[in-house]
Image (tube, rainbow, N blue to C red):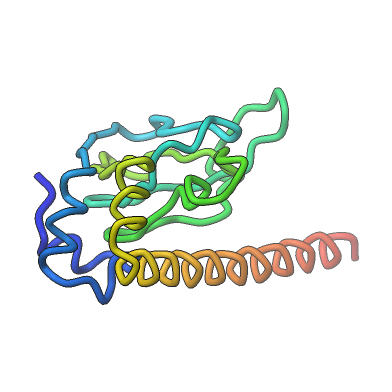
Amino acid sequence: MVNIEFLKQVQVFQGLNQEQLAEIITCCEETEFKPGDKIFAQGDDAVYLWIVKEGAVDLRFEAAGGSSSAEHTISTIPEAGAFGWSSFAAPNKYRLSAYCANESCTVVKVEREGLKALLDKDADMGYAVISNVATVVGTRFHEFQEEAARRRGQDILGGW
């Protein structure tokens, strides 16, 4: 069950008070996955913001018509980490696929429309959450840049 103490640990909900966190709980649902289970696919409608409660989740790029493996992992999201920020950005499609990364994982899905209604109703909560989401997006972008540079360096060095 999702509780306020857990939500306090989640970066996108930092700075919210007890009442605001209690309202967010009404939009949350816990789901469990087994190792390698696909949580969502790249291109699916982004109707949830997701949070890792237990375990970890791999975000992977999948080429059209191709299969996915751990080699395609762009980022691994740890406990209390949020993913699926595409639910906040048009066209509301997931940009990567998400997979359970270890023996099992428990994730919390936060329904976009319910959360959006809360953020519209409480401007302070809306500002805090969207600011925190922007921080997550920025951090992931920098991680992606570093990984791309590392892989590019390996490709260049591999040709020697």
